[in-house]
Length: 202
Image (tube, rainbow, N blue to C red; front, side, top):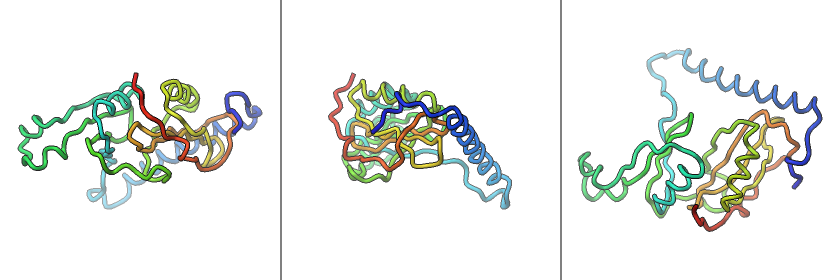
């Protein structure tokens, strides 16, 4: 795979990719705005509130999502908290989790669970996180420096789209995605079989 760090696109291609990226972001914002305006006004769903991610070790999950990815830990929901909230005793173990947030989008609830991770080679489900185009390669380096293998950046969308794929320590598939990326990158789906690793922590 050619290195996007070494090969720069011609100026006209870089300008085009930035323009397409800005146009796509405006289109997404416009689509949300139009949804809010169309009838019935009182019968619409709001934004996605949260997504759940199964993790076998919440200490490792916090180290990865908060320590490495920079999420903000919103809340630790442990057994004593669930007891105080009146959860039945036989449900408490299944409710233990961490709630984390990023700058935008839904909350991620990291649930203590040994099941629920996607098959290792399946491209779905995965959680995609937005990153500024100029930060994608810095994130790739940050992940690789911590022993997390990545695939990409690669393009599956319009010119200027770029995705970087990786797994959390539990095998959940994650993606960093951007629009307006100006580097020369290959086009095509990721090979997720290259993303397995053993998390060694900090």
